[in-house]
Image 1 (cartoon, rainbow, N blue to C red):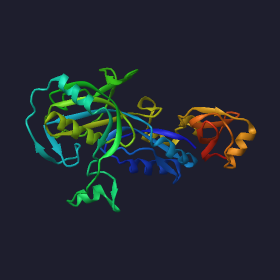
Image 2 (cartoon, rainbow, N blue to C red):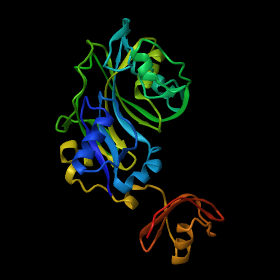
Image 3 (cartoon, rainbow, N blue to C red):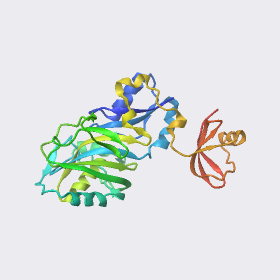
Image 4 (cartoon, rainbow, N blue to C red):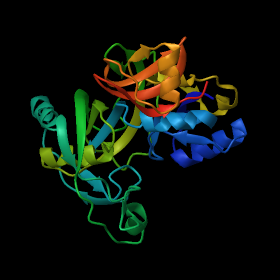
Length: 311
């Protein structure tokens, strides 16, 4: 019943990965905790069999990315799938100006999702309407962008670093590290390399569009690698062709909430759906004898079960 962090290859949808894992693990019960676009690579967290009940608790995990933002050309998809729909000359870039733009995009934001996304409005998927030549009115959504770190400005996507290693501050360029594969570039456009940490629901394609707008030029996301989801890092993610034998994490280890150990009576009451008295505050993982009992919301007086596990 593991939770497995898979290293998603380029040009596969998240659903493609789920289908392959279903076949490899010989089960239909596979879910993921956050979609990656086909042109993005990196960490895709999967829950297998009974661990699918954890998906609701991991969808809100923060995520880290490496993003290559090409300036001077925008696309209808906001990424390198294209086609290019607008071009403009890019003035000489001042790094202080770029960092100021990134700073303005950090923190709580109202972000308009891409038209090419799986968001539904009135029963219609935005990407289906966009592929048919239409567009939906997609309202801005509240997201939180925790940190945007400019790693460099380069004359083109082709000239930007592709080889990285993990560091305490996140993945950084390193000639001795791991080589990432990006989609084919849509020309030679000045490119910003950005390390991002974002909250749930944030679209890096929209961030690239908004960063270009802040700098006064069209822009698109030329490449994206997700390097972390919650506690799952890319350095420990499993290649897709090795997923059949992956051990992954058990349910208890996969949950990141504070842990509270309780006695046998309290554990029994929680499994019965009761609200035992307890001074804890916030969302907690409750254990008894080191075994997972429940995820609860605590108000300082009682424990309210969000999900309980049988003995």
